[in-house]
Image (tube, rainbow, N blue to C red):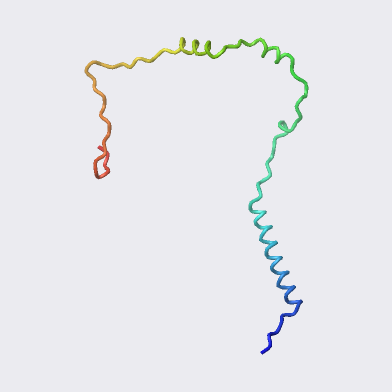
Length: 105
């Protein structure tokens, strides 16, 4: 028994079909996973001025600098602890408990 070889043209056709299927598969995958085009407003796309605004810079320089210790003193002096309003005869409400069956009491 002699094995018959496939003709070269048939091998070429099979490889071409495999290439086309893979190519189409990759294109479909690329189209499905492609991110949508975002529309950016024109106001964001306009170029900004490269010149610094001297008025704003002078306002920044005039601001008061408070170091961390002064800031802590300022915060501590402004905070007033809230005193709880507890009556003499009132009791706290009991915490909920779960029994062995998983029921909340």
